[in-house]
Every structure is written in C-alpha cells, then in structure tokens.
Length: 316
Image (cartoon, rainbow, N blue to C red; front, side, top):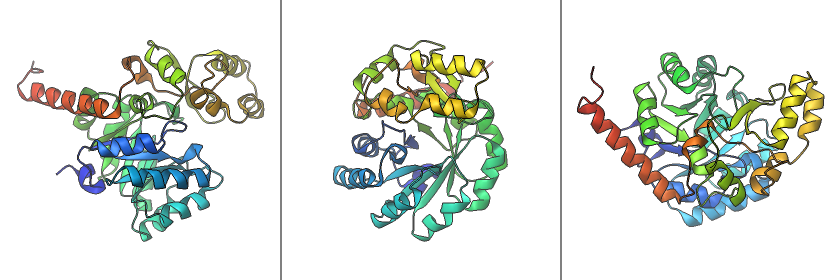
C-alpha cells in the first residue's frame, strides 16, 4: 500500500495545501470526502475562527483531515491547544523549526508533517521525529524557500537525504505531474493552486477568475528581503518590484506590505492593490471546478500516464 495513504488513512496520496484565505472547512472537507487529505489553513485564521472551522469540517466529513500551521504564527500555542482539544488527527507545520512542536503533537497521537525547501532541512525534520516531509519547489505559490530550487531538482535530493514518507509540492496540478514526482522519489503530492480555484475554496471569485486567465510568466517571486513569496503581477507587485530594484530596506518593504494585504487580495477580491499568491501551475488552470471533479481529473490522468509508461510509450 502507498505509504502516504497508509500514514494518513486516505484513498489517494493527494494532500490539499493549507493555503491562507483559501483553505476553509468547505474546501478541506470536500478534498477529504473525495479521497485525499484536506487541510485547514490556520495561517489566516484567528484561534476562534479555526475552532469554528474544525467543528464544521467534522460535521461535513467522517474522513481524516488536518490543519496547516505556519510556526511563525503569533498565537501558535493557542492554535495547537485547540487542535489537540478537538483531536484533529493530522498537523502540517511550516515556516519554522519542526523541533519545537513535533514531539508535543506526537505525544497526543497527532501525525505530523513538515514543509521544507532543501534536503538539509529534510534531515532536520527526520531528526525532529516528523512522520512525513513535504518538499516544496519554488514554483509553488505563497511563501517560498530562499534556495529557489525547482521541484524536479528538490525531490531526488530530499529522497536521498531521508527515507521518510515524502510529498512533492510546487508546480503540481495534474495527474501527469503527480506521476512524474513519484517517479523522482515522492510517495505522494501536495497540491495548492489547483484547489485554490476550486468552487469550494474560500478565495474571492474575482481572484479565482483572474488565476484562470493567467499566462506563462504571470507570477514572480518577490518580497525576498522579508519572506520570498510568489505573487501575481499586479499593481501591488509592481510597487514591490520597484522598491526591491531601488534597494529598499526590509523595514521599508514591511511598511509597503502593511497588514491584511493578502486578505485584501485573495479574500476580498482587490485585484490591483491586494497580495495575490498563486503558483506557476496557474497557467494550466483555466476553469473553476468542484473539488470532486478536480480530484477525478487528477487520478484519471495519473492512471492514464502510468498505463502509457507501462506500455512503453516513452521508450527510445
């Protein structure tokens, strides 16, 4: 049996990214009900809001689900206590050291995965005792690794560095990409952008529509002096780009970013002045679909690609 399916008790080795302003209870429960693992995105939720979404997810699915917790979150302790109190079975951590919370979570019977952008940090994860690792290439939307390593380069390197169950993330939005990642050594995939534009995503409809219209080069890594973030090229991005080219300080960049910029863009639909985070794979996303259809497309394409490979289609 597939190691990711066995670890999380799911049908398909497909994890939905816990994306800010996109990953609420409707999306998480729909992915879990479709055979994957849905994640709530705690990074854009106050503790009370997260608790509400956990309760609603439990009411909407009897399948496993989890919470993604960026460890730079200012109320991490409250978030973790809420997760434990509601017996959420899975936690994905990111943006920080896995050492701080992995043992605490596992002592409570929670399965832990951590997101990394290098084989070096994958080794740190294994030492910390995580159950699985997500290796995310810089094609991904949102916050990104400073190494700017592509997924196809990262996955084989991380596979050599650890024997733990491995999820590939970044630039994966199809069954063909899923098979490619698994050929490179991954046991499964984490998909963000394709689910960010799902009908059940809590992102603003205008943001979803914009994503379906993006072409090649429609996103770029920015905010490198703060935390590298892949953004849609809009008016806000242009301001960031000009400030970075002018050599503005991290403090000045933080002031430009301000507070609530991502909410303004992805949740409230300000396509000009909002921070719009999405991956390079957006060029392949040309339609807003329900989760069940997205998952069905991914699995069917994976099986077709696997069959084609087995029939020698790719032989020289």
